[in-house]
Image (cartoon, rainbow, N blue to C red):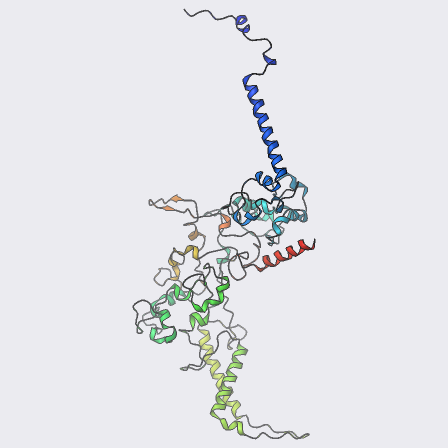
Length: 500
Protein backbone atom coordinates (compact mmCIF):
# COMPACT_ATOMS: atom_id res chain seq x y z
CA UNK A 1 0.00 0.00 0.00
CA UNK A 2 1.29 3.56 -0.75
CA UNK A 3 2.32 5.70 2.21
CA UNK A 4 -0.28 8.17 3.47
CA UNK A 5 0.01 11.73 2.08
CA UNK A 6 1.93 14.36 4.02
CA UNK A 7 -0.41 16.73 5.80
CA UNK A 8 -0.61 20.27 4.42
CA UNK A 9 0.45 21.80 7.73
CA UNK A 10 3.62 19.73 7.70
CA UNK A 11 4.39 20.74 4.09
CA UNK A 12 3.85 24.44 4.84
CA UNK A 13 6.30 24.29 7.70
CA UNK A 14 9.12 23.70 5.22
CA UNK A 15 8.73 27.22 3.65
CA UNK A 16 10.39 30.09 5.53
CA UNK A 17 7.93 32.80 6.46
CA UNK A 18 10.38 35.51 5.29
CA UNK A 19 10.91 34.06 1.76
CA UNK A 20 9.46 37.15 0.07
CA UNK A 21 12.02 39.49 1.65
CA UNK A 22 15.05 37.58 0.38
CA UNK A 23 16.00 37.52 -3.36
CA UNK A 24 16.17 34.17 -5.02
CA UNK A 25 18.57 33.06 -7.75
CA UNK A 26 16.31 34.12 -10.63
CA UNK A 27 15.84 37.61 -9.19
CA UNK A 28 19.58 38.01 -8.64
CA UNK A 29 20.20 36.98 -12.26
CA UNK A 30 17.70 39.51 -13.63
CA UNK A 31 19.17 42.33 -11.54
CA UNK A 32 22.68 41.45 -12.74
CA UNK A 33 21.58 41.36 -16.40
CA UNK A 34 19.87 44.74 -16.07
CA UNK A 35 22.99 46.22 -14.48
CA UNK A 36 25.17 44.93 -17.29
CA UNK A 37 22.79 46.33 -19.91
CA UNK A 38 22.82 49.73 -18.20
CA UNK A 39 26.61 49.77 -18.06
CA UNK A 40 26.80 48.83 -21.76
CA UNK A 41 24.34 51.59 -22.71
CA UNK A 42 26.25 54.18 -20.70
CA UNK A 43 29.48 53.03 -22.29
CA UNK A 44 27.90 53.25 -25.76
CA UNK A 45 26.73 56.82 -25.09
CA UNK A 46 30.11 57.79 -23.67
CA UNK A 47 31.88 56.39 -26.72
CA UNK A 48 29.54 58.33 -28.99
CA UNK A 49 30.32 61.55 -27.11
CA UNK A 50 34.08 60.99 -27.33
CA UNK A 51 34.07 59.86 -31.01
CA UNK A 52 30.96 61.51 -32.59
CA UNK A 53 31.25 60.10 -36.10
CA UNK A 54 31.89 56.52 -35.08
CA UNK A 55 29.38 56.76 -32.28
CA UNK A 56 26.63 57.86 -34.66
CA UNK A 57 27.46 55.05 -37.05
CA UNK A 58 27.14 52.49 -34.25
CA UNK A 59 23.45 53.28 -33.75
CA UNK A 60 22.72 52.92 -37.51
CA UNK A 61 20.40 50.20 -38.71
CA UNK A 62 23.07 49.01 -41.14
CA UNK A 63 25.48 50.11 -43.89
CA UNK A 64 24.22 52.46 -46.59
CA UNK A 65 23.98 51.36 -50.22
CA UNK A 66 27.01 51.66 -52.46
CA UNK A 67 25.90 55.00 -53.92
CA UNK A 68 25.55 56.52 -50.42
CA UNK A 69 28.63 54.92 -48.85
CA UNK A 70 30.33 58.32 -48.59
CA UNK A 71 27.89 59.34 -45.86
CA UNK A 72 28.11 56.15 -43.82
CA UNK A 73 29.43 58.05 -40.80
CA UNK A 74 27.72 61.39 -41.50
CA UNK A 75 24.20 60.90 -40.21
CA UNK A 76 23.41 64.62 -40.32
CA UNK A 77 23.73 64.53 -44.12
CA UNK A 78 20.18 63.10 -44.16
CA UNK A 79 18.87 63.13 -40.60
CA UNK A 80 17.82 66.12 -38.50
CA UNK A 81 17.18 65.75 -34.77
CA UNK A 82 13.51 65.26 -33.86
CA UNK A 83 12.43 65.42 -37.52
CA UNK A 84 11.22 62.28 -39.33
CA UNK A 85 12.16 61.39 -42.89
CA UNK A 86 9.68 58.56 -43.44
CA UNK A 87 5.98 59.16 -44.04
CA UNK A 88 5.00 56.24 -41.80
CA UNK A 89 6.60 57.81 -38.70
CA UNK A 90 4.14 59.03 -36.07
CA UNK A 91 5.63 62.54 -36.03
CA UNK A 92 4.76 63.06 -39.72
CA UNK A 93 1.24 63.98 -38.59
CA UNK A 94 2.63 67.42 -37.72
CA UNK A 95 3.71 67.95 -41.35
CA UNK A 96 0.41 68.35 -43.19
CA UNK A 97 1.04 70.74 -46.07
CA UNK A 98 2.95 69.87 -49.23
CA UNK A 99 5.64 72.42 -48.32
CA UNK A 100 6.11 70.81 -44.93
CA UNK A 101 6.46 67.36 -46.45
CA UNK A 102 8.88 68.64 -49.07
CA UNK A 103 10.99 69.96 -46.23
CA UNK A 104 11.32 66.40 -44.91
CA UNK A 105 13.00 65.44 -48.21
CA UNK A 106 15.51 68.26 -48.00
CA UNK A 107 18.44 65.89 -47.53
CA UNK A 108 17.47 63.77 -50.55
CA UNK A 109 16.74 66.72 -52.84
CA UNK A 110 20.21 68.14 -52.43
CA UNK A 111 21.31 65.50 -54.91
CA UNK A 112 18.08 64.10 -56.35
CA UNK A 113 15.88 66.95 -57.59
CA UNK A 114 13.42 64.72 -59.43
CA UNK A 115 9.99 65.79 -60.66
CA UNK A 116 6.74 64.81 -59.01
CA UNK A 117 4.91 61.59 -59.77
CA UNK A 118 1.84 63.04 -61.45
CA UNK A 119 0.30 66.47 -61.99
CA UNK A 120 -3.01 65.23 -60.58
CA UNK A 121 -1.60 63.65 -57.44
CA UNK A 122 -3.04 64.54 -54.05
CA UNK A 123 -0.17 66.20 -52.11
CA UNK A 124 -1.34 64.92 -48.72
CA UNK A 125 -1.03 61.33 -49.98
CA UNK A 126 2.46 61.68 -51.39
CA UNK A 127 5.00 59.91 -49.22
CA UNK A 128 8.50 61.12 -48.50
CA UNK A 129 11.50 59.83 -50.41
CA UNK A 130 12.55 57.54 -47.56
CA UNK A 131 9.07 56.01 -47.43
CA UNK A 132 9.82 54.06 -50.60
CA UNK A 133 13.60 54.25 -50.90
CA UNK A 134 14.68 52.70 -47.60
CA UNK A 135 18.40 52.64 -47.06
CA UNK A 136 20.67 51.05 -44.40
CA UNK A 137 20.14 47.63 -45.99
CA UNK A 138 23.72 46.92 -47.00
CA UNK A 139 26.15 47.91 -49.72
CA UNK A 140 24.59 45.76 -52.43
CA UNK A 141 20.99 46.82 -51.79
CA UNK A 142 19.19 48.52 -54.70
CA UNK A 143 17.01 51.13 -53.04
CA UNK A 144 15.46 52.02 -56.40
CA UNK A 145 13.54 48.75 -56.38
CA UNK A 146 10.63 49.55 -54.13
CA UNK A 147 8.01 47.09 -52.94
CA UNK A 148 4.76 46.79 -54.88
CA UNK A 149 2.78 47.84 -51.84
CA UNK A 150 3.89 51.46 -52.33
CA UNK A 151 2.54 51.50 -55.90
CA UNK A 152 -0.63 49.55 -55.22
CA UNK A 153 -1.60 51.83 -52.34
CA UNK A 154 -2.94 54.21 -55.03
CA UNK A 155 -3.15 52.17 -58.22
CA UNK A 156 -5.40 49.57 -56.67
CA UNK A 157 -8.12 52.28 -56.80
CA UNK A 158 -6.60 55.05 -58.96
CA UNK A 159 -9.75 57.18 -59.18
CA UNK A 160 -9.76 57.62 -55.40
CA UNK A 161 -6.21 58.96 -55.34
CA UNK A 162 -6.24 61.58 -58.08
CA UNK A 163 -7.55 65.11 -58.33
CA UNK A 164 -8.82 64.51 -61.88
CA UNK A 165 -10.47 61.10 -61.42
CA UNK A 166 -8.61 59.45 -64.31
CA UNK A 167 -10.16 56.72 -66.39
CA UNK A 168 -7.62 54.13 -65.28
CA UNK A 169 -8.20 50.47 -64.58
CA UNK A 170 -7.27 49.01 -61.23
CA UNK A 171 -3.95 47.20 -60.87
CA UNK A 172 -3.33 44.57 -58.23
CA UNK A 173 -0.40 42.65 -59.72
CA UNK A 174 1.21 41.78 -63.04
CA UNK A 175 -0.95 38.76 -63.69
CA UNK A 176 -3.61 37.66 -66.15
CA UNK A 177 -6.38 39.37 -64.21
CA UNK A 178 -4.45 41.91 -62.16
CA UNK A 179 -3.05 44.20 -64.87
CA UNK A 180 -4.78 45.80 -67.90
CA UNK A 181 -3.58 45.47 -71.47
CA UNK A 182 -0.88 47.89 -72.59
CA UNK A 183 -2.60 51.14 -73.61
CA UNK A 184 0.26 52.20 -75.89
CA UNK A 185 -0.45 49.29 -78.23
CA UNK A 186 -4.10 49.99 -79.01
CA UNK A 187 -3.38 51.61 -82.39
CA UNK A 188 -0.45 52.19 -84.69
CA UNK A 189 0.10 55.95 -85.08
CA UNK A 190 2.42 55.39 -88.03
CA UNK A 191 1.33 56.35 -91.55
CA UNK A 192 3.62 54.30 -93.77
CA UNK A 193 2.47 51.69 -96.32
CA UNK A 194 4.75 48.97 -94.99
CA UNK A 195 4.03 45.30 -94.34
CA UNK A 196 6.44 42.87 -92.72
CA UNK A 197 5.10 39.90 -94.70
CA UNK A 198 6.26 41.34 -98.05
CA UNK A 199 9.62 42.52 -96.78
CA UNK A 200 10.40 39.23 -95.04
CA UNK A 201 9.64 37.21 -98.20
CA UNK A 202 12.50 36.37 -100.54
CA UNK A 203 12.81 39.11 -103.15
CA UNK A 204 9.82 40.86 -101.53
CA UNK A 205 7.56 38.52 -103.53
CA UNK A 206 4.12 37.84 -102.09
CA UNK A 207 2.61 35.93 -105.05
CA UNK A 208 4.17 33.85 -107.86
CA UNK A 209 3.04 36.41 -110.46
CA UNK A 210 4.31 39.33 -108.40
CA UNK A 211 6.38 41.68 -110.58
CA UNK A 212 8.47 42.77 -107.59
CA UNK A 213 11.51 40.49 -107.49
CA UNK A 214 14.48 42.19 -105.94
CA UNK A 215 17.87 40.60 -106.57
CA UNK A 216 21.14 41.55 -104.95
CA UNK A 217 22.34 42.65 -108.39
CA UNK A 218 19.57 45.31 -108.38
CA UNK A 219 21.09 47.02 -105.34
CA UNK A 220 23.87 49.57 -105.25
CA UNK A 221 27.21 47.72 -104.91
CA UNK A 222 28.09 49.97 -101.97
CA UNK A 223 25.29 48.46 -99.84
CA UNK A 224 24.92 45.07 -101.51
CA UNK A 225 26.98 43.18 -98.93
CA UNK A 226 24.91 44.59 -96.12
CA UNK A 227 21.88 42.62 -97.33
CA UNK A 228 23.77 39.54 -98.55
CA UNK A 229 23.02 36.38 -96.61
CA UNK A 230 25.69 33.72 -96.19
CA UNK A 231 26.35 31.89 -99.46
CA UNK A 232 24.29 34.22 -101.67
CA UNK A 233 25.42 35.39 -105.09
CA UNK A 234 24.41 38.61 -106.83
CA UNK A 235 21.74 36.76 -108.81
CA UNK A 236 19.95 35.49 -105.70
CA UNK A 237 16.84 37.18 -104.39
CA UNK A 238 17.23 39.66 -101.55
CA UNK A 239 16.32 37.98 -98.27
CA UNK A 240 15.78 40.48 -95.49
CA UNK A 241 15.73 39.51 -91.83
CA UNK A 242 15.07 41.49 -88.66
CA UNK A 243 18.64 42.73 -88.38
CA UNK A 244 18.62 44.10 -91.91
CA UNK A 245 16.71 47.12 -90.60
CA UNK A 246 16.55 46.88 -86.83
CA UNK A 247 19.89 47.66 -85.21
CA UNK A 248 20.46 48.29 -81.53
CA UNK A 249 22.13 51.52 -80.48
CA UNK A 250 25.95 51.76 -80.40
CA UNK A 251 26.31 49.95 -77.08
CA UNK A 252 25.52 46.83 -79.08
CA UNK A 253 28.27 45.24 -81.13
CA UNK A 254 26.08 45.08 -84.24
CA UNK A 255 25.73 48.86 -84.50
CA UNK A 256 27.18 50.40 -87.63
CA UNK A 257 29.38 53.43 -88.09
CA UNK A 258 26.40 55.34 -89.43
CA UNK A 259 24.80 55.06 -86.02
CA UNK A 260 27.47 57.18 -84.31
CA UNK A 261 25.05 60.01 -83.59
CA UNK A 262 23.54 57.86 -80.85
CA UNK A 263 26.86 57.09 -79.16
CA UNK A 264 26.30 59.65 -76.40
CA UNK A 265 23.18 57.85 -75.17
CA UNK A 266 23.87 54.29 -76.33
CA UNK A 267 22.87 51.51 -73.98
CA UNK A 268 21.82 48.64 -76.21
CA UNK A 269 18.27 48.82 -74.84
CA UNK A 270 16.44 50.38 -77.79
CA UNK A 271 16.63 50.03 -81.53
CA UNK A 272 17.78 52.90 -83.68
CA UNK A 273 15.09 54.83 -85.60
CA UNK A 274 14.21 53.66 -89.09
CA UNK A 275 15.39 56.15 -91.70
CA UNK A 276 14.99 56.26 -95.47
CA UNK A 277 18.68 56.81 -96.14
CA UNK A 278 19.85 53.93 -93.97
CA UNK A 279 17.16 51.31 -94.51
CA UNK A 280 14.96 52.07 -97.54
CA UNK A 281 17.04 53.79 -100.20
CA UNK A 282 18.85 50.62 -101.27
CA UNK A 283 15.63 49.31 -102.86
CA UNK A 284 13.45 52.42 -103.13
CA UNK A 285 15.41 54.92 -105.22
CA UNK A 286 13.94 58.41 -105.02
CA UNK A 287 14.80 59.85 -108.44
CA UNK A 288 12.75 62.61 -110.01
CA UNK A 289 13.10 61.20 -113.55
CA UNK A 290 12.34 57.62 -114.51
CA UNK A 291 15.35 55.51 -115.45
CA UNK A 292 17.89 58.06 -114.17
CA UNK A 293 20.03 58.46 -111.09
CA UNK A 294 18.82 61.95 -110.19
CA UNK A 295 17.83 61.67 -106.52
CA UNK A 296 15.71 64.04 -104.50
CA UNK A 297 16.72 64.40 -100.83
CA UNK A 298 14.24 62.55 -98.66
CA UNK A 299 12.29 64.47 -96.04
CA UNK A 300 11.66 67.68 -97.98
CA UNK A 301 8.32 69.44 -97.86
CA UNK A 302 6.27 70.01 -101.02
CA UNK A 303 7.51 73.60 -101.21
CA UNK A 304 11.11 72.53 -100.74
CA UNK A 305 10.78 69.90 -103.48
CA UNK A 306 9.45 72.56 -105.86
CA UNK A 307 12.45 74.79 -105.10
CA UNK A 308 14.82 71.85 -105.55
CA UNK A 309 13.32 70.92 -108.94
CA UNK A 310 13.24 74.52 -110.15
CA UNK A 311 16.91 74.90 -109.29
CA UNK A 312 17.85 71.56 -110.87
CA UNK A 313 16.14 72.33 -114.17
CA UNK A 314 17.49 75.89 -114.27
CA UNK A 315 20.98 74.46 -114.16
CA UNK A 316 20.06 71.89 -116.80
CA UNK A 317 18.63 74.57 -119.10
CA UNK A 318 21.71 76.77 -118.75
CA UNK A 319 24.01 73.82 -119.41
CA UNK A 320 22.11 72.99 -122.58
CA UNK A 321 21.77 76.67 -123.63
CA UNK A 322 24.97 78.44 -122.56
CA UNK A 323 24.35 81.23 -125.08
CA UNK A 324 21.51 82.44 -122.88
CA UNK A 325 24.07 83.89 -120.50
CA UNK A 326 25.55 86.00 -123.32
CA UNK A 327 22.30 87.71 -124.35
CA UNK A 328 22.08 91.48 -123.87
CA UNK A 329 19.33 92.56 -121.54
CA UNK A 330 17.23 95.64 -122.50
CA UNK A 331 18.24 98.78 -120.67
CA UNK A 332 15.67 100.30 -118.34
CA UNK A 333 14.77 103.91 -119.29
CA UNK A 334 13.08 106.09 -116.65
CA UNK A 335 9.45 106.73 -117.49
CA UNK A 336 9.32 104.12 -120.25
CA UNK A 337 8.01 100.57 -119.79
CA UNK A 338 10.41 97.84 -120.80
CA UNK A 339 8.93 94.82 -122.49
CA UNK A 340 10.34 91.70 -120.83
CA UNK A 341 12.13 89.17 -122.90
CA UNK A 342 10.19 86.12 -124.06
CA UNK A 343 10.35 83.46 -121.33
CA UNK A 344 11.89 80.80 -123.56
CA UNK A 345 13.51 78.94 -120.64
CA UNK A 346 10.52 79.26 -118.33
CA UNK A 347 8.32 76.99 -120.46
CA UNK A 348 11.07 74.37 -120.48
CA UNK A 349 11.57 74.53 -116.70
CA UNK A 350 7.87 74.55 -115.82
CA UNK A 351 7.14 71.58 -118.09
CA UNK A 352 10.03 69.61 -116.62
CA UNK A 353 8.99 70.42 -113.05
CA UNK A 354 5.39 69.30 -113.68
CA UNK A 355 6.59 66.05 -115.20
CA UNK A 356 9.00 65.43 -112.31
CA UNK A 357 6.32 66.15 -109.72
CA UNK A 358 3.98 63.66 -111.36
CA UNK A 359 6.72 61.02 -111.34
CA UNK A 360 7.56 61.75 -107.69
CA UNK A 361 3.92 61.56 -106.73
CA UNK A 362 3.84 57.95 -107.89
CA UNK A 363 7.14 57.18 -106.17
CA UNK A 364 6.20 58.82 -102.86
CA UNK A 365 2.72 57.30 -102.96
CA UNK A 366 4.20 53.81 -102.77
CA UNK A 367 5.04 54.38 -99.11
CA UNK A 368 3.31 57.60 -98.02
CA UNK A 369 -0.22 58.91 -97.68
CA UNK A 370 -0.88 62.39 -99.04
CA UNK A 371 -2.60 65.20 -97.19
CA UNK A 372 -6.37 65.15 -97.75
CA UNK A 373 -6.58 68.84 -98.63
CA UNK A 374 -4.02 68.49 -101.40
CA UNK A 375 -4.11 64.89 -102.65
CA UNK A 376 -2.45 65.66 -105.98
CA UNK A 377 0.54 67.52 -104.54
CA UNK A 378 3.66 66.15 -102.89
CA UNK A 379 2.47 67.11 -99.40
CA UNK A 380 2.68 63.77 -97.58
CA UNK A 381 1.52 62.96 -94.09
CA UNK A 382 4.20 62.66 -91.43
CA UNK A 383 5.42 59.09 -90.98
CA UNK A 384 4.91 59.15 -87.17
CA UNK A 385 6.69 55.83 -86.65
CA UNK A 386 6.98 55.32 -82.87
CA UNK A 387 10.55 55.35 -81.70
CA UNK A 388 9.47 53.92 -78.35
CA UNK A 389 6.22 52.00 -78.20
CA UNK A 390 5.86 51.64 -74.43
CA UNK A 391 5.16 55.27 -73.55
CA UNK A 392 4.85 54.75 -69.80
CA UNK A 393 7.18 51.80 -69.30
CA UNK A 394 10.79 50.76 -69.81
CA UNK A 395 11.82 47.88 -72.05
CA UNK A 396 15.38 46.68 -72.54
CA UNK A 397 16.12 44.71 -75.72
CA UNK A 398 19.65 43.98 -74.54
CA UNK A 399 18.26 42.16 -71.52
CA UNK A 400 16.17 40.00 -73.88
CA UNK A 401 18.96 39.25 -76.36
CA UNK A 402 18.70 35.50 -75.68
CA UNK A 403 15.07 35.51 -76.87
CA UNK A 404 14.42 35.17 -80.60
CA UNK A 405 12.55 37.89 -82.45
CA UNK A 406 9.86 35.41 -83.48
CA UNK A 407 9.04 34.63 -79.83
CA UNK A 408 7.65 38.14 -79.30
CA UNK A 409 6.84 39.23 -82.86
CA UNK A 410 5.55 36.09 -84.66
CA UNK A 411 3.29 37.95 -87.10
CA UNK A 412 6.25 39.85 -88.54
CA UNK A 413 7.44 36.71 -90.37
CA UNK A 414 6.10 35.89 -93.84
CA UNK A 415 5.79 32.16 -93.12
CA UNK A 416 3.51 32.69 -90.11
CA UNK A 417 -0.09 31.53 -90.49
CA UNK A 418 -1.38 34.97 -89.52
CA UNK A 419 1.45 37.06 -90.95
CA UNK A 420 0.78 40.78 -91.01
CA UNK A 421 -0.45 42.13 -94.35
CA UNK A 422 -1.75 45.52 -93.17
CA UNK A 423 0.36 48.49 -92.23
CA UNK A 424 -1.99 49.25 -89.34
CA UNK A 425 -1.22 45.96 -87.55
CA UNK A 426 0.53 46.41 -84.21
CA UNK A 427 3.18 43.71 -83.92
CA UNK A 428 4.57 44.66 -80.51
CA UNK A 429 4.21 41.98 -77.85
CA UNK A 430 1.41 42.56 -75.38
CA UNK A 431 0.97 41.46 -71.78
CA UNK A 432 0.17 37.83 -72.60
CA UNK A 433 3.62 37.36 -74.15
CA UNK A 434 5.36 39.00 -71.20
CA UNK A 435 3.50 36.72 -68.77
CA UNK A 436 5.20 33.68 -70.25
CA UNK A 437 8.30 34.68 -68.29
CA UNK A 438 7.33 37.50 -65.94
CA UNK A 439 5.21 35.68 -63.38
CA UNK A 440 5.85 33.50 -60.32
CA UNK A 441 7.67 30.28 -61.18
CA UNK A 442 5.34 27.35 -61.70
CA UNK A 443 5.27 24.03 -63.49
CA UNK A 444 3.50 23.86 -66.81
CA UNK A 445 0.36 21.73 -66.72
CA UNK A 446 1.08 19.79 -69.93
CA UNK A 447 4.79 19.16 -69.34
CA UNK A 448 7.47 19.01 -66.70
CA UNK A 449 8.88 22.37 -67.80
CA UNK A 450 8.93 25.31 -65.41
CA UNK A 451 7.51 28.60 -66.66
CA UNK A 452 7.79 32.06 -65.19
CA UNK A 453 10.35 33.01 -62.61
CA UNK A 454 11.42 36.36 -64.11
CA UNK A 455 10.87 39.50 -62.08
CA UNK A 456 7.33 40.82 -62.23
CA UNK A 457 7.23 43.64 -59.69
CA UNK A 458 6.05 47.15 -60.64
CA UNK A 459 9.47 48.78 -60.89
CA UNK A 460 10.68 46.15 -63.33
CA UNK A 461 8.90 48.12 -66.07
CA UNK A 462 7.64 51.36 -64.51
CA UNK A 463 9.18 54.43 -62.94
CA UNK A 464 7.52 56.58 -60.32
CA UNK A 465 8.73 60.10 -61.05
CA UNK A 466 7.17 62.01 -63.98
CA UNK A 467 4.84 59.09 -64.66
CA UNK A 468 2.30 61.35 -66.38
CA UNK A 469 4.78 62.45 -69.03
CA UNK A 470 5.35 60.60 -72.28
CA UNK A 471 8.90 59.51 -72.92
CA UNK A 472 11.32 62.06 -74.34
CA UNK A 473 13.44 60.31 -76.95
CA UNK A 474 13.80 56.80 -75.57
CA UNK A 475 12.82 54.83 -72.54
CA UNK A 476 11.93 56.28 -69.16
CA UNK A 477 12.13 60.08 -68.73
CA UNK A 478 14.35 59.41 -65.72
CA UNK A 479 16.67 56.98 -67.40
CA UNK A 480 20.25 57.26 -66.10
CA UNK A 481 22.21 59.98 -67.86
CA UNK A 482 19.32 61.21 -70.02
CA UNK A 483 17.36 63.61 -67.85
CA UNK A 484 19.02 67.03 -67.99
CA UNK A 485 16.43 68.37 -65.56
CA UNK A 486 18.01 66.42 -62.72
CA UNK A 487 21.47 67.71 -63.50
CA UNK A 488 20.34 71.32 -63.68
CA UNK A 489 18.32 71.07 -60.49
CA UNK A 490 21.29 69.56 -58.69
CA UNK A 491 23.43 72.61 -59.44
CA UNK A 492 20.55 74.94 -58.57
CA UNK A 493 20.17 73.25 -55.17
CA UNK A 494 23.91 73.41 -54.56
CA UNK A 495 24.01 77.11 -55.40
CA UNK A 496 21.08 77.75 -53.07
CA UNK A 497 22.84 75.97 -50.20
CA UNK A 498 25.96 78.06 -50.73
CA UNK A 499 23.88 81.25 -50.75
CA UNK A 500 22.49 80.41 -47.31
